[in-house]
Every structure is written in structure tokens, then in C-alpha cells.
Length: 139
Image (cartoon, rainbow, N blue to C red):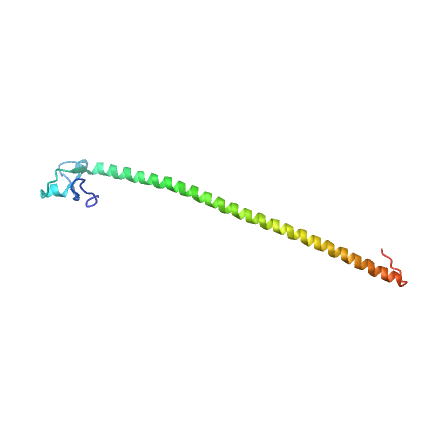
């Protein structure tokens, strides 16, 4: 499984898989290529496959836990960013509502002014008709 992927800590050579047919699978191991071929000065460096699996699984779990912790931090950061964006949006909408209310108040004032002006024009028109001798009765 790990053949060609693990290296000797002393000489840096690859560790090759070795098995013994007379033993069960727990005796499978990886040993230094330079020791195997007796071409180097490296001594009998080896690691049992089960130990290597435990080390790798432990590291995988550690990295996964670190990733999970970072994901939680990432989610927290995204939540804070979204909260800030939502808050900005709410402030913008409140400002728009305030502007709309001011516009409505202005339009109401303009409407009242025009109604008052029309009332004055109407009263002046009615008074001018009364002056000419025509009586204007209302309701």
C-alpha cells in the first residue's frame, strides 16, 4: 500500500514492502532499500505495516480535525460577514424608508398647499359671482 511512498529517516532511500510467507499479515513490514541490497551503509531500518497504518490514520484524523476546526472558523467568519452585510443592508433600507417618509411628508404638504390654494381660488371665484348679482347656494 505504501511502497515507494515512505522513505528511510537516515539515508533517504525508499522503503520497500517485505512479507514473510511463514508469518501472518501482522509481520508485513517496509525496510530500507539500501539495507535490502546491502549497497549502502544503512542498517536494518524497517517499520511494520500495521504501525505505519496507525501513524497514517492518526495523521489523517489530526488533519481532518484541523480542517474541521478551520471549517468552523470559516463558518464563523462567513456568519460574521453575512451579519455585517445584512446590517449594512438594513441601514440602507432604513435610510431609504426615512427618505420615502420625508418625500411623503413633502407631497402631503404640497397637496395641502394646493388644496388651500384651490379653496382660495374657489372662494374668490364665488365672491366674484356674488358681486355680480348671482347668488351661489351650496348644499
